[in-house]
Length: 264
Picture 1 (tube, rainbow, N blue to C red):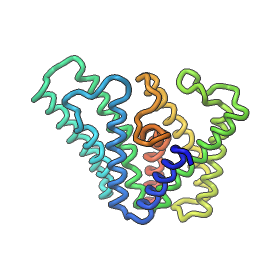
Picture 2: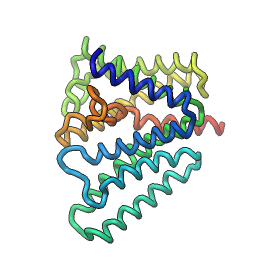
Picture 3: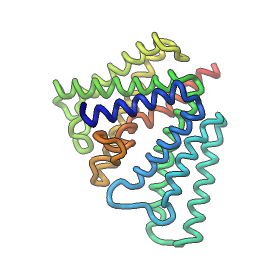
Picture 4: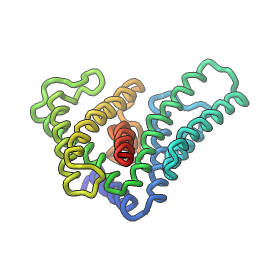
């Protein structure tokens, strides 16, 4: 068994165990750790490293913001973002002071907090609707990824975004949308989910488009940084962001839909 397969088997088993057996708190802690790792990876892309003010604070606070979704208080994650911002700038005021690279570094931290910590943290809120609700967007993303890979490898000719991801094709992207919509229908038909089969198909289509853009966004950032992978935490798979990039923009939208359905 290859290292890649072993890593996927171990990580997948651990994730499912925590999701279905561990309870909401343990799942929230797992997502918080993942958010902290993701923020750390995002700030270490390329040769530019976080400055002395960021250090470990940005990563740890990213985990705190993700865990802020656990109580179900809508304003709490935003409040944590505000508090983290104040702490961040206090570090600059009391430390290095006004240096030219400070605005750029703050932009990197803010982007990592929003795109990784807050986006990923929505998984904690989705868990309130049951573990299968967390599994649904993941199944949709995985189905699309698999279809895009095999169809793109077999018949892909027209490049989707050659400057960002040369291996992706229009044919693979269309197959990905179709597979995700089909998975949305199938999952909604057999799993205890808070939406209809028709809604599942539409969600699969919409979430897949977001997932493909999420994948391209990380590819763009990695190319700008001149690196192949976001990290090395998963042997044979690269970094955490390499595994969850497509899922990040999907989670807030799916959470928003669930919130809307709950009020209807």
